[in-house]
Structures are given as structure tokens and as C-alpha cells.
Length: 370
Ligand SMILES: Cc1ncc(COP(=O)(O)O)c(C=O)c1O
Image 1 (cartoon, rainbow, N blue to C red):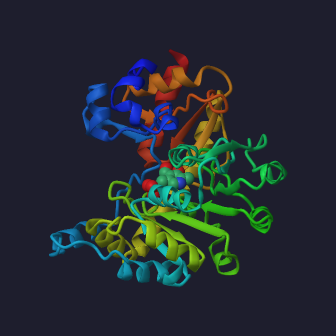
Image 2: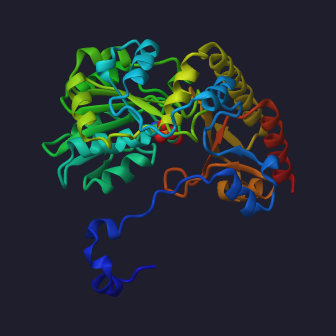
Image 3: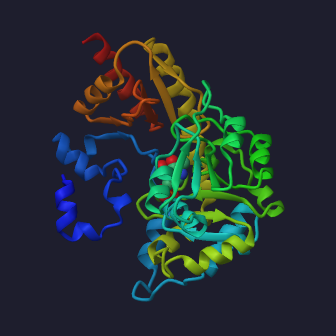
């Protein structure tokens, strides 16, 4: 812990004061750390806390990484081959596309492009924690506009929050952690209000719902996508944004030149060349999502919310979410618990393989009985 007197004396006195007080983002932990902390071998852990792909990446990725001969050469700062490959996938021209080291990096770059100190960013809570975190790192002010009871965006509330200092609205669709999509007319309403609207479609492949084609019609609409979830590349860090070309040009100017490493580039190209395989695993996860939803509903003490992503938010209607979270951890099953007022009575459970669902349901049943 740093006390205010430390801040006056050491190098901390040179930190940006607003960052000295910033709370760290609370990330999920990797398998080896979970294994060490729980004393359960990594192979025995059921990891349903990160919305990762339980089937891994395409087998072509490993082959392509092994065969690639130029790891000693820096990647293309303009990401030419990669943007061409993404163009064919997303249907908008390469001049609309910028790649990031995960879509997390693009969230940060967008904020850096638009925010002056004290500018406002509208955050439709509960939602993905990187929006407020990166906003604060970039010197912006977060304005929370809570979602309604079924987690729909409060469009009138957002519009009421738009003043001269409001620059950006983030809309995750499907939303993490609630799993619902924001209907296109609602998104258009906010775009028409003139603010920059970032529609984060990290889970698009599980919903099939997109506003990407609209980017061609507006200069203030951005769509973000990720290779972490559907393509199983979370560990390699690759995401992309579909931008109006003038925004894409400016982002390319301010991004670190070699932001997407060569291994990630090779992996993305191999994935896009093996889409049929990946779509098969996405279909398996969607089918499992529906089975998981039914099994969770049958337990009687959880209320799962319908989801168009690869996770399900559950309200614990009888019992304590944090206790269940801890109880599951003790048997090597990791789900996500958020210690925030809106989510304290909830658990977010990523869709795993069928055997993961079975183990989870059996553990929840035992916890309930015991
Ligand atoms: C809504 C949303 N956006 C972006 C991300 C970050 O994805 P990436 O791994 O591409 O940085 C996540 C990851 O959980 C997410 O849930």
C-alpha cells in the first residue's frame, strides 16, 4: 500500500496524481497460476471464467507457427496482408480495418485518439471493465448509465448524458457479462446523436448479429472484434476494429508501429484459412450454451439470463454467489464473480465442453446439498 506521505517523497510524487489513486483492473488468472493457488494440476482445472474457447484454436495454427521462418524480422506496421485477410472475412475494405494486440489495445487507442483530460465516456453498466479502466488511464471521466432490469441499454439515459464533453459511448453487443445484444435501431439513435459509438462485437460469432455494414454510412461508428473467443487465440492477442477510414488512418498513425506480433499475424491468417473448422466449434459452443442454460435453470436456485455469447450470467436467487464461487474453486471449477453492487449476487459462467457442464452442475448440486 502506498500512503500519501510516500507519494510526497519517492518517485511517486512524479506520477500522474489521478493514476496513483486508480484501482487496478481485476483480470482473470492463467491456468498455471490457478493450478498453483488451488493445488490442483492444470489438467484437472475446469476454467469457465474467461470466455475462452474450450476447443482451442484451429489445428492449422500450430502448423503455420512451426513453419514460419521469419520470427527475427519485425512485423509490417501497416498490417497489409492481415488487413486483406480480415477484409475478406468482415466484408468491409482494408482501409476500414486496424488490428490490435487484442481488442483491448484498440479500446485504449480509440480513447487516446479522442479524449482530452476531463472528457466524458459513457459506460452502460454492468459491462466490460476495460472501458472505465482505460478511460481513466487516458485521463477521461467515466459516466455510468445503468442498464434496465433486463440489461437493455437505457437509450434515453445515454442521450441525456450527452453534453459537450461527452465523446464516446461504449456498447458491448453481446454485452459482457449479461449476454444480450443491443438492437440496431437503438445503436443508430445514438450514432445519430453525433457522439462516437463503439460497438464492441467481441462475441459476434456467437450471436450472428452485427452492425459492421453500417460503418460505411457513418463517420462516428466503430465496430470492434476479437480473435480471442471464437477463434481460440486469446493467448496470442489479436483483435481488429472496423472504422470509418479517417479514424483508421489516425489510429494507424498513433499506434505502436509493431503492435501485432508476427506469431499473432501468422495465427490469424491460418485461422481465417480454416473458417469451416472454427465455425464447427462455434456451433458446438452455441448448442452447449443452450444445454447449460437448461441445466442451470433446473437447479432451482439460479436464474440464468438468456445469452447470445459464449457465457451465461446467473443471478443466485437463493444463497450467496460469493460462497458458490468459492465452493466451486475448491473443487477446481473457476467461474467469474464480480464484487460490484450490480453483480454481487451473480456468477458469470463461460460455456465449456459438455463434460465441463456436467461437472459444474454436479458440483453446484453438491454445494447446495452440503
Ligand atoms: C466485451 C469485450 N470486449 C473486448 C474484450 C477483449 O478481448 P481481446 O482478448 O481481443 O482483447 C473482451 C474480453 O473479455 C470482452 O468481453
